[in-house]
Image 1: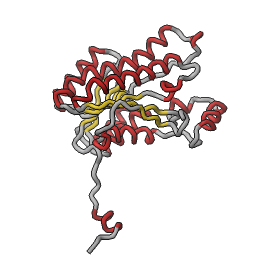
Image 2: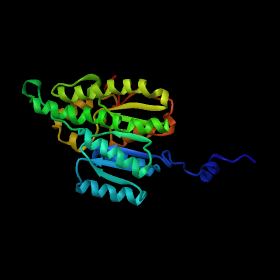
Image 3: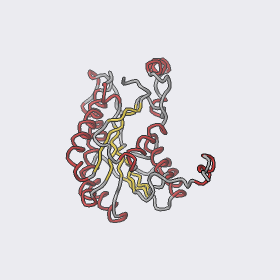
Image 4: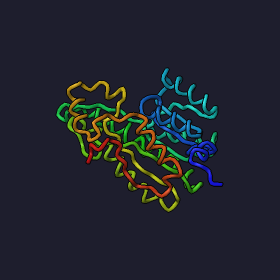
Length: 262
């Protein structure tokens, strides 16, 4: 006798998309990184969280993650510092044996018009947003090559695709991530290691909460879907790219922007 859809649904066991996978997420103490860490854990991954320092937010996050999976871990490290990243990679591999997915999420803004932008603010944004991607990819790629598998998700931005006034440093860093991602994908595709970039648009976070109402309204009016994105909207795309559902996807830039970059 054929089963109805309702019976099939009732008898189906939920398959977690990241079951038995180990995922590392940088800059994950809050915002998009935090929501991504939570979703990855909910989907079965052992999640390794890194951030510059331990904070109340990271402590709260780790309590939540460990309630889901006691093997989840937190490490402090400056993602822009090569020596710290290299040491962290060795510690992670010694402890967990491998990393299946990396989400390069660490990032900051120091917005200003170019005429007012200081060289220090330029260097800081490039170091943390772009150099960190180089550091983590370079530090972990030898281990991924040995396993002949891995997925790297680099966090760019629609600002890296289209530019934005007052964000020359940020847009340069995010555009650099796109170029890096495509080159990396070409270099390591033959080793079954994938590398993709996500490009969030106007996402509702603590950072965007500070945008004046008039600017917020104009931005929302320009978005075809007429709403801001959520942290979960972004996390779900990272989940897809970290999972085996995207095993033939590499070198791509996926805009999560409600259509604003069209």
